[in-house]
Length: 82
Image 1 (tube, rainbow, N blue to C red):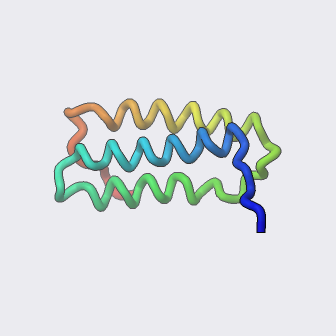
Image 2 (cartoon, one colour):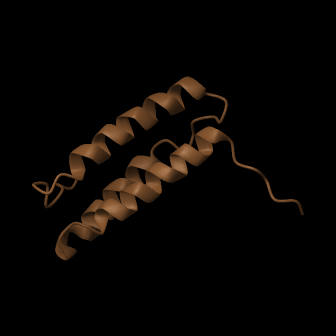
């Protein structure tokens, strides 16, 4: 079975998720599970978005990048549960 190629947007989403996981490694060990759970929930909430809905995906990528930038701050040591 031939391997399916990812679109540019799909690669961007995966890159953002990987960046989130890398950023979580910089957080205190005791708060990492909460960050991981939060990141996963944020991505899972939008699984129903169609691949062809480019505007929505780009919008969510912008929001995700901004949140990642905020959470990467060394002053953010934990995340509240929702």
